[in-house]
Length: 301
Image 1: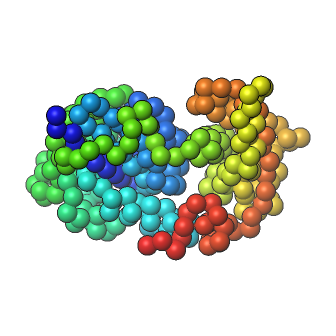
Image 2: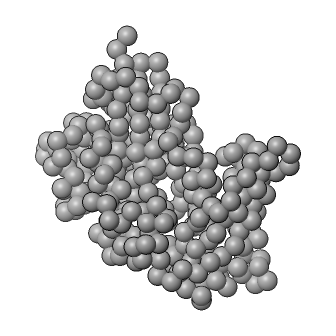
């Protein structure tokens, strides 16, 4: 029996549906999803295994032009994931790029498009668009002969996902499986818990607050009797942000803790006691040492 296996990197501008797509393809929520751009900060690996193939998806931060060190590190995750890929999945939002030219005009995207990789363009959110717009994009981009395939999809509705899988399998190399069939990711539970808490911060707080926060799991204790104990530090950049996170008499962080605990328990499939506290780390998004401690490795190129 022929086995095909390989790495498939999902890339696109912020908020086009990359994380929603990977979660839909895997059939499990590995990447956090919010309606705010730049929710994904690191590479998230998700594994789809079948009898005769294994697809290792890499969900990446949205392509942007970095303004500070954290964003530079985010783009390094993108570049490394592109280098590792056998197949590239480019996603555009058909409603925000109605003729497909924004994608191709972006200088950072252009550099990636020149890579000698199999490339599939996904036209996402077609359920919010119309047939004429989709046909126009396909016509405009097909003329440029950049992509090996163009597939209209709706990641949130699960439309045309089988077409994506079939296209990927066509381009994957023959190779033994990289991971056991029952493994969904290479990350541990602590990582996913921190991401879930960060997702709830993005959902609950407005404006700059979510982008100024990082979540560090300080303790993660599994108990034979009673609930698992998780202690999480919410890192912020300025003292003035602390009362916003806490809220009046601690009301806001209580709401956050309740929402986060519920989602963590759903993910872990067991009860937990979640303790949240806030710590100020001045300008952590531009601090090389802190970024390294938080897993961003800003020196990597």
